[in-house]
Length: 106
Image (tube, rainbow, N blue to C red):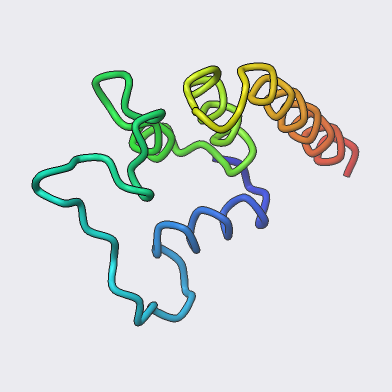
């Protein structure tokens, strides 16, 4: 994980580990008859572990996590083509490189 405050805040807010106010929203549940929901889509369930579990385990920042997410789902999401995902990967890689370059120059 980087020392970039933006990256830490993104994950803290997403996983509820930061100082943000607790949500009153009921967490999503998975139906016992159907493992796939809009919160747990099949295009992220192709391997033995969930993509987001890997991202959290590796403590990846927001940008790196999205790169991994799109690599893992490339060509497997019904609404998008494989090229769409690879273009997103390129955009996140370019943004990550820009962020690292900016960090090194400060």
